[in-house]
Image 1 (cartoon, one colour):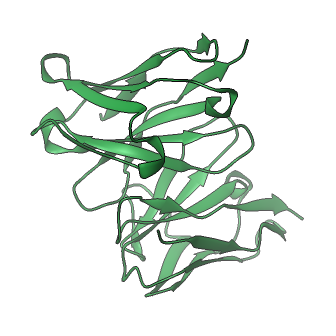
Image 2 (cartoon, rainbow over the protein chains, first blue to last red):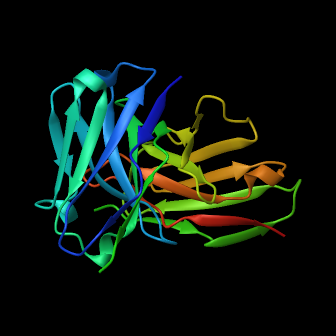
Length: 118
Length: 108
């Protein structure tokens, strides 16, 4: 069965960086885009960007350009999202999600809580 | 950027009744619209894509309709497990992919 398993809780200080992983299984990793979506406490969903694991291409939301980098390691079917220059506004649950090239996000990781606090 | 607006923010419905949730796009998104359900502490779950196609394993009690700028998610005969927050998302014009702010469906 399709699974996306994310790395664990992170606590960071302002100005630091965080790297979240998303290990996939149950499907061909290079056949689906991986998106990253975040959700601040009590808030809605915010799209951050995607990576095409096949071509290693990325597209980021303008809001995060210059601060986010998405990568993948096809040998372990894992995607990564790194966010730099963290502030308290980056405190959120970060999700990875699979897109079957038709736009919708059909499977999601369990989420990774990132807390930014001094 | 396409803005997605959901209404109402909170909907109170009794079990067994029907719920109708609305989503409006600031410009046409054709049928490139998805609905997700999110329960506390869980990731969103895909319910509907292409405006009206149920995702794999989703109950026939969930139905989607609409195109262009106006969309509806209908849940017939509400069951206890249906009380959650629902989000619409457009994927017609990106970046960015955009979500509505959510509708909380609560027990009346």
